[in-house]
Amino acid sequence: MKKAAVILGSDSDLPVVEKAFSVFEELQIPYEAHVFSAHRTPEEAKAFARSAADNGFGAIVCAAGMAAHLAGAFAAETVLPVIGIPIKSGPLGGMDALLSTVMMPSGIPVATVAIDGAKNAAYLVAEIFALSDGELTKRLLEVRKKSKEDVLKKDAQLQARRG
Image (tube, rainbow, N blue to C red; front, side, top):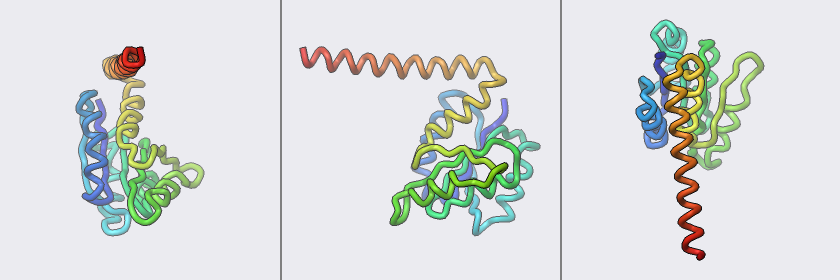
């Protein structure tokens, strides 16, 4: 199985991104996490993006707030799928990061999840990897089944309380 790369624009993004780590661990997807800045470490970020496929990565998740150029900078340097997590920060509450992440030029796509949507970023990576991994597909289907059961259980509890 390919690895997922998780790139944080700052270590302050870690509390949000740890939710993606939990999904990767639950689904048994190998991953690495690194801190690179599109503005402070552009050469290191570029080198990582350019070598990611050769180093066994199958997708890259980038988490950044405010100007949020990180995902776009990575997408410009690789043809691997890049998924952006806009991080809630600054006076605009993450809307600036959301718009910066989602508004990419034609031909350089960044799949973008909700503000602080680290879990969905990890699930999207899992769905991409599952295209060529039947066992991962089964694990994803089990997660969905459990989620359904949890919702139905909560509904039953609500109905019992309302009597």
